[in-house]
Length: 130
Image 1 (cartoon, rainbow, N blue to C red):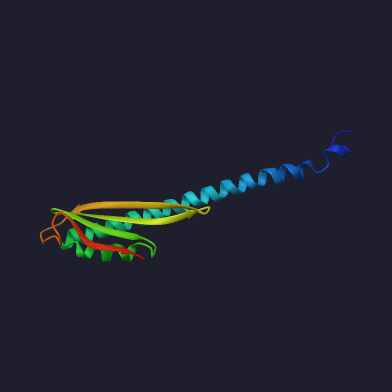
Image 2 (cartoon, one colour):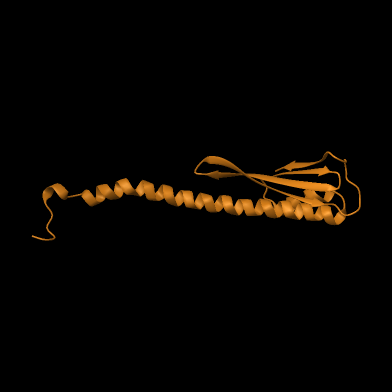
């Protein structure tokens, strides 16, 4: 008769569900991890942009690190370097996706208006890790 199950098929739906569930959970965790990494990248990019903009407006790279710190998270590592009249702000932050450490980073460069650089052609010493 249609719709009638034999004794050998009992529990097959439960077994199929138990086999498929880990795959579904892994897929959901991967998607959530990708979203977390993406939002962390946007935050790093914004912190680098703000830092480079501050250095550009003030003509001095000392303001770049402090401005980037305000936007970046506590775990971010910020490095500011100058090369001639250009400043480069690099922001890097760790992200853990399913216990796998991944480092997300972003950088932004901008020309400095007037002013002077802290150390022409070198690192300004504004490197901070939280």
